[in-house]
Image (spheres, rainbow, N blue to C red):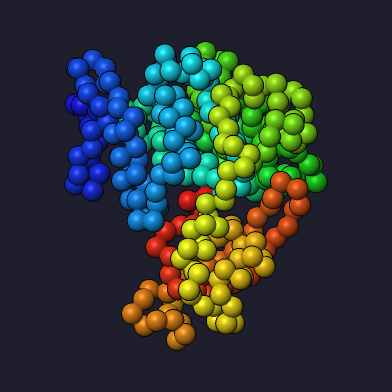
Length: 302
């Protein structure tokens, strides 16, 4: 890429600032315009940047573009990774998926749900710990609510071991291999989940950037908006179902047409994925039938 200040998406060129041939002078307002456009491409036309999130986004932008002056003001070390924390549904996963695109010249990181790491350990054993101890860059999503690992009768706090491996790698590479994570848990809950030793290593691995504890669940707002006038097969409004069942962990799966759906639409099944919250391990596998959403709800919320 000749000019890192300009990025083309969908045939449209976006400018993130000015490039003098050596470095980019970034413009935050222009970055927001690009993030809004890229978000719509990734997550659907319903995506938008919320005003209340701009403070968090600004801090993340300072980190990713390595604005050392502003990072110093924000108490952010660009040599560390990011631990983005906040309530369920506030947008942590979405932002971590999105922000990496503003710096296409930097080494990308892969988003990995922590539950996938635990499930991998259950099938492959300690090879999983070794695999995630590689020099790849990762962002571990939903840290702290993954199920316990068990391999041939041996229980293991899988993500705790992965974080210790990542910390050792961080030291061995002289802070060149970064690890990021998102979590719904606060510092005390993380220490209770992983122990004091891992929590101590996390302080050295991560910069903590936190949403307000009162930040709302954007998925509920989106779902209520789109389904407030739609009906499920059982005759309930989606809003009523949402309030009764707290169904905010959703993902869309293409299914064949149903005779009860509008023949001019492209119906989808809404599937409640199995999930674990921070306090109660519970599994939900109900199937809902409704009119389509044109985006992944799960991607818009965590």
